[in-house]
Length: 556
Image (cartoon, one colour):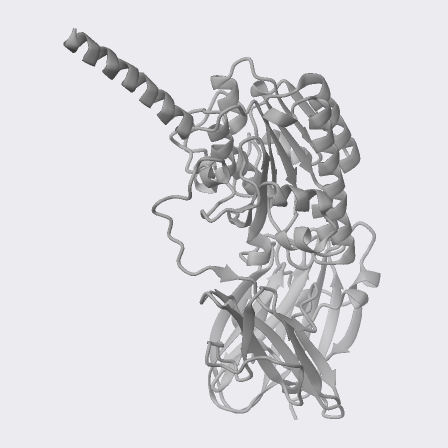
């Protein structure tokens, strides 16, 4: 009897242990997952727009403010990565030109439809009776998932009709997995610019539609068993995206509902391809080995942050220097015959701002900002925030250019109409349709917009002038542009940043004697938003916008 009793006790212990381990390994009771994807919605948009619904979801759920996207920061590869649990290197979707029957990089593994396995296909495979649906505003989303995996597949032309149909679908079918894609915030980013009032209005509209979806979930009696995830594919800068900047390459992800912690800030590093793994985790599914995404477990009740989490120092919000960056204009500004006033604001509680005026990176021993101050000569202001826990922000730079009139400063600018350009044309063979003078290398929207032909945003600019070099030595020039640009000194190509691309920076070096040297920049815009900045650095000169007081219309 003793042996039988011990054996019986062991079996009971084993079964209980297995059940306990299982209950601790996956969330319990999540019957529905609803993903609301908002194209182009940045963390800045959520923080600065009127978003009571998302604010409430964050307060009652979990959030990760700096989810890293894949590169380039365009839609196809990021939406694909989100639903495919892997990056472009695995699924092969590397740009918006990708099509199932027209691409250069094959997926590392493919399913019946010839594409990399997505969460849609995995749910269908492991939950054969599941109701699965996708409703989307951008038609491109529809080519990224397995069509045979879904019961419902609809595309609509507006955000309102997209949301309305998705809500109707929720109420009638109570889907196991539903994905809705809204595209209007990205439209506002391209049309009006990220960080503009119009952009924030579009984010506020998304928030109201999210509220309607939540209402639909409640009316469908799904609220108590549904996990809702809010996500995006990229942010933006100016009127575009695609480049490798935090503004473009970081998004926010909000998890709310069944089994999600309340008011929780996720510490685990999160990548856009972790979304699919998280959905699989919520449903207790086995992800494909080819996926590289990891579930965001600490967002769920009963799950801790990874034991091996490499936290390091937290990067806190960078300070703002006024006049702050706006679309195509860097922080700071051009001041003619007047000094500039420098004002800063900390964006993190319990933090102080340290700054420099000589181009050095600020540290904790640099001067502390206390009140606005004036500068009366061209100055690079750099600032960092430091909190009481020893965490630091990234550097914020502002470029204050002070110019005194009557010194023959400026550049000659030629404007060219284009059509279908994917790279810089041979401007020497073209005739400019308009010419003017500019103090700096800048693409002024107020000047450009009236010159654009209806339905055609392709144009080119050529800047010609002279740059004053005071100290001989090695200089590094760079252009940051959307789309392509090249820079020439004394008719020698120094920077090649050509091509149809998002905001991208390229640089080159040249050794120069003291004196004035011929400088030329060629730029073109293929479509959509546009951007051009020209920087230089050299002996005793911190990296900065090439200032107006060093640019001249004539050599002498």
